[in-house]
Length: 127
Image (cartoon, rainbow, N blue to C red; front, side, top):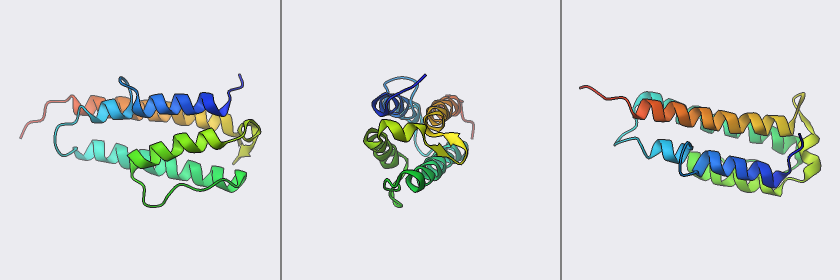
């Protein structure tokens, strides 16, 4: 299976901002201050995005992610970054793995994290 950068950008956009089953949708379920587990999931995903894109930037010569961006801004940046990739970039190996596979795995990670956030947001909290 060979995807184009626009395909991967659409997948990431949906995983991050779709109306259902996305990071945005899951975070909208959180009432008030996020509990530590949700904050940890957000921090982990943000770190994962930074690490992935730092490696991609090294290999492709494209810009690295902004240092001061939180999850929302980093997610928006990421979708645009995927759109600027050339189809041949997706075949490049990043730390021994084909970039297309890394990006698909990242989409799965975003969706998995959204599910975890939603699960923790739906738990009834007791004082």
